[in-house]
Amino acid sequence: MKILNIAVFLAVTAFVVLPTTADAADQQEFLPYDELKALGEVEPLFGRRVTVCAGQSHSGWGLENVTTDFTRCGGSWDNLWQLIELNGAQPGQRATLCAGSRVPAGWSVVATHTDFTKCGRNQSFNNLKTIQKL
Image (tube, rainbow, N blue to C red; front, side, top):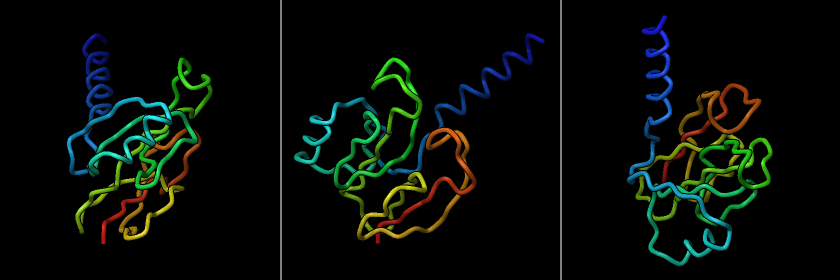
């Protein structure tokens, strides 16, 4: 039984740290909205990630994931958004967004797929879409 518990722990732990499809180094941090807006004034970095309270976004960023943390942002379900910066992407680079996300100008959907651990609770099939810079 102890070996089974360790195997389950390792499987879950390994799953949590899998990289996403963006090409840039994973740089995730939690930012209030004013600081997110300020990122629009710095050098674009495709693949940069930030976590904000749900409902906050900024031009050139896509919704990559929706999660819950009852200790932040009002403490409700699906209260955190993980955003990925799309600014600075070169033609052919790809990112994966929640299916309900808007596809920015200059990008095209190249695939849809399912991951029930992404994009909030109560997800259905094809809850993710991969987009590619034209």
